[in-house]
Image 1 (tube, rainbow, N blue to C red):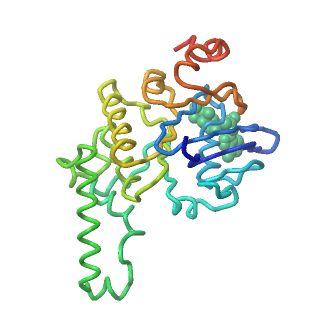
Image 2: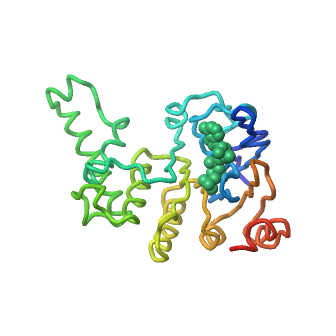
Length: 255
Ligand SMILES: Nc1ncnc2c1ncn2[C@@H]1O[C@H](COP(=O)(O)OP(=O)(O)OP(=O)(O)O)[C@@H](O)[C@H]1O
């Protein structure tokens, strides 16, 4: 097996008297789809917030390609290729779908002020490349037809796909999706599943998923971590998790 792209040990996050994340460990191999499940308030989003530098964890080690990153701010972690979506869609609603993708591209653009003012050939080339890349991703997520519509007017499932495309504009290595199927109908969830599979197979992306839709989790994950009240309860393949008595009792029994 290759070296883990992400290895988390002893991750702990305390908010005053509340231990929201207690000694969580995760090992993620490149190109895997790894899911985190657990009831509401289990601490899953807090783990995401620690992994993306939004919170500085109270304790623990986060290794990205063997390099400790638990002390780094969010923008530095993003630069290392870790990007995420949020539970609630966070698009620029007044901007068109394609504009939403172009704003994510700024790091790869030639943003030299003078070059932009003078519209130098290299600036134009970099603008052209950004536009082509945005068109590519709109096509990949099947949104070419609505490229010029304000993002806020798109159907919910389309907005979710646009968010993923926006993440992909930054050429991530790890894509973290927080409840991407929430609010989707069964067909949109199937589209999402196909999209995640395509990202992994065609774009070498590693996917970390928080999701309550057990059918999706079971069908797409290589490995699943179960968290309960901030504490790891079990981890394993979908088959192992499906047959784990503690998990059945705590979660799957009601699904
Ligand atoms: N910034 C914060 N300050 C104080 N408490 C917080 C903060 N963020 C999260 N919590 C608390 O930490 C616990 C874990 O919350 P978290 O959102 O991580 O759970 P979750 O598993 O993602 O839940 P859900 O499935 O509902 O999204 C909750 O009790 C929550 O109220």
